[in-house]
Amino acid sequence: MMIKFLSSFQNDVAKQIILLVCVEFLIFQISGVGYTSIGSAPYFNIGVDPLYWIFYGLYIPQTIIKYTIIATTLDFATGGFLLLSLFKFNEKFIRYSFFLLLMYYVTLTGYLGHRNYQTGFVWVLIPLMFKSEKNKMIAFESLRYWILFFYSSSAAFKIWGDGIFDVNHMSSIFAQQFSPYYIEQNLGIRTLINSYLINNKFVTQLLFWGAIIVESSAIIGFFTQKKDKLIGAFLIFFHLFNWILMDISPLGQMSLLYIFFLFPFIKKSII
Image 1 (cartoon, rainbow, N blue to C red):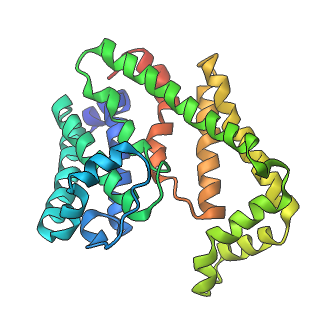
Image 2 (cartoon, rainbow, N blue to C red; image 1 turned 90 degrees about the horizontal axis):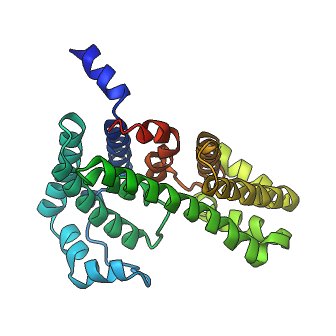
């Protein structure tokens, strides 16, 4: 029975994606940023995104974290629908999971005041919501191009910004990013690395240029799919490096970037 399950899992793109989303959601919970852990936050930063206006205008996130019973129920419901989708794939379960994760993402990032860095664990489910293989394929193709645009445009903004020739630019970002560590007098290995980078501006500038090159590699994907695995590896490496050097977690993007490795199987419609 287990061998049969593992064999089907190996060839089932949907299950691999859902499993990664399950792991990501579990890590969020363990990290203490689930609905229940957020608690009654007195302040939200919803920015200029109309999506946030809708949710917060309807008072949805505020109500969820105000009442522990609602927060706990939604935490379990989200994880429950993801597990149901993993063991018994159903487009309806995926749609419920997508909506619940989107609501969680809007609440979490509104609370943190920092958006767009963990969108992957939500958007990656979009292709799986369609029933027909043709629509799934179109959605996967569209999502792939969106990922390429996301990273290539990030590289473009870095190039057009003032930091590309400013040796103080990246070192000041490193200093700001780790300011809570210094306030808490955290002397771990990452703080030591951060201190070295702050005081070696040429090295930080090289890292900044390296980030531009890595993100620019996404442009290749607009012309060919043959380099997808290389692009995916570059971007995962980029996020892991960011995690070590800047404490920017990559968890919410891993399932999204995994599509670059799955695309040959997706093309064969093994879903």
